[in-house]
Length: 159
Image (cartoon, rainbow, N blue to C red; front, top):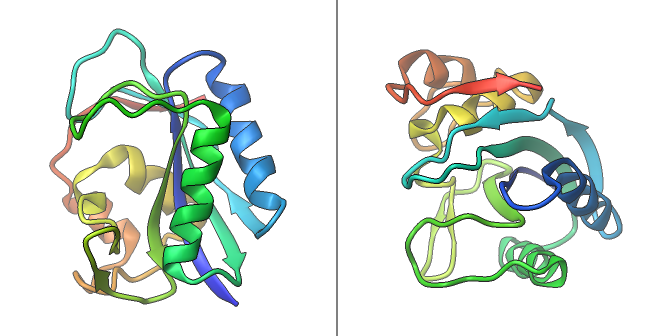
């Protein structure tokens, strides 16, 4: 079994219900160990009038990293996520792998740890709530320290 940390996000439709449904679906094949509070956040990397709801989750999984990615993509597809190119965009649900144990990998399909995690308060703040002392395996700093050094100034408010 591996411990993975995920980031969930939604800014279309009933955002709270979207997060709950995604967690329920994840819990059908993985053990959900902990969930952060839900945070309302400004879109990162693009402009949109709708804010995001974001939440971090710690899970136990028997899936390999590639299998976990495919599982999460299937959940996104089943929930109705549409992809319209490589640029950032609004989404019904977004499920990202932030960490998978202490694994470091960079393939065409998947990079772990998430390559922009340390630049995003909307990911660091929920992660700090569930794993403040987790050490980023590349940067060698814990989540609390990464948040202290993060220069992102976008609004992140606990709901």
